[in-house]
Amino acid sequence: MDAGELLAQLAYQKRLPVEAIRAASADRAHAAPIFVHAIEQFVSSDSDRAAHDSLFFIFHLLGDWREKSAYRPLARLMRCSPDDVDGIFGDAITETTHRVMAAVFDGDPGPLYEVILDPKVDEFIRSRMLEVIAMVTLRGEMPRSEAARFLRACFSEIDPRDECFVWNGWQSAIALLGLVELKPLVEEAFARGFISNSWFELRQFERDLQLAMDDPGALARQLDGEYSLFGDTIEELSTWYCFRPEYAKRSERQNIDQSNVLWSARTAVNPYRSVGRNDPCPCGSGRKFKKCCLTADLGLTPFQAA
Image (cartoon, rainbow, N blue to C red; front, side, top):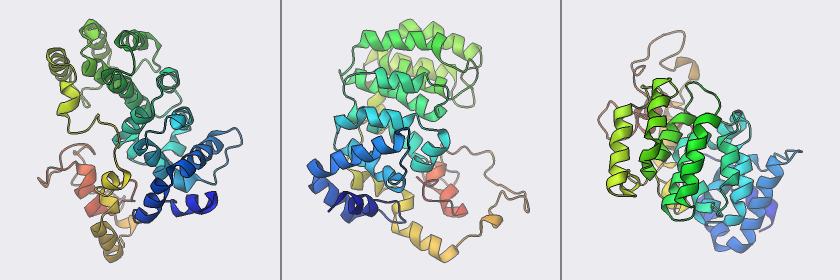
């Protein structure tokens, strides 16, 4: 299979391209350089966008394969415009980007630092890359002293000096590593309003910090795979609502007109207006709202369903 055919078969579609993923995995030595080159072309100054529709699956396969040669190109991909990043990853921005980047980490935190400290980068990406710092440190791939130094420096170097989700990842990384010496800085960040109480409360940080202090790595283990390295691409992505058969059937059956979405201007009604995307679904399924009734009832796009 030549490069063009391989990329075409991995272009985003309404179903998980299982056979193309298996074929690429079976010939990883051939496919990995093609994928890395496609990313390099996309992030180059010329911005060759030919592989745009394939980047979602390419990204996850490279994480699945622990492809270290992809680390720096993927870090540059993280620094693309928020619109580009959102168009490629959708909710994978918060669901899997940190797990993939930790899986391809090559031992040099410099590219992660550049993502984190770049105020033009999507704030959710920056937040997750801070958690990558904690993940690779817990795995012994980065000195704890260096992680602590960088996280301390972040307090004065992160921009904006205002409410922004990047600060949520910062406090999360500190808690994951049990860095009690940085607790006063986190308290100051809460006091200044950098971290919104609608996302997280100081008492929750204190609880998480104590848990990590009592048992290093316990917090990461407790969170149901949230901080595990990305695994088998087919196994992981097949659980996403947008790739399950019922999603395709529902989409075909309902063919929802976007003008009739519940929060449209015509009806001005949204029974879920107080429910956050990451909150437990009100239906009681135990799933996150964005993975349950938000997508099932409103017919959102596949990436929104991620």
